[in-house]
Image 1 (cartoon, rainbow, N blue to C red):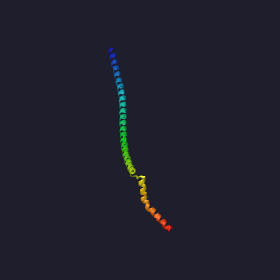
Image 2 (cartoon, rainbow, N blue to C red):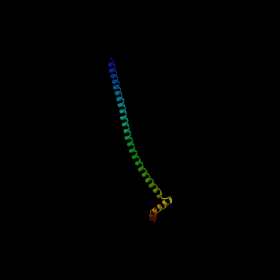
Image 3 (cartoon, rainbow, N blue to C red):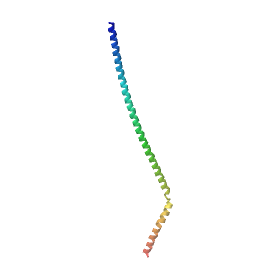
Image 4 (spheres, rainbow, N blue to C red):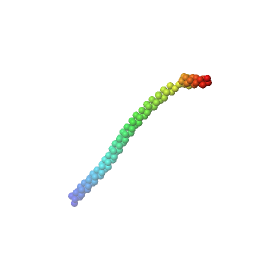
Length: 114
């Protein structure tokens, strides 16, 4: 009976070891699946981060170009404002351009009166 008890105990021990090994492998697979999901999530996160960084670089370049265009436009407008004549200068220019026309009109009136 002692040999049968020993063999039973050895069988039970092997069963327990087998069950423990199966449980250990199952737990290991669960962690591997979680690791794979985590790796996939990190890869997706890095990919999205790179895409956002590229878009940010594009936006920065566009805003820099827009700022340069606005600076150019502002300089152009400021140049035009500086070139706007004063009212007195405008009156003088108008007189200079319209004076021959007024003289012609006045000469025609004089001709008609005579």
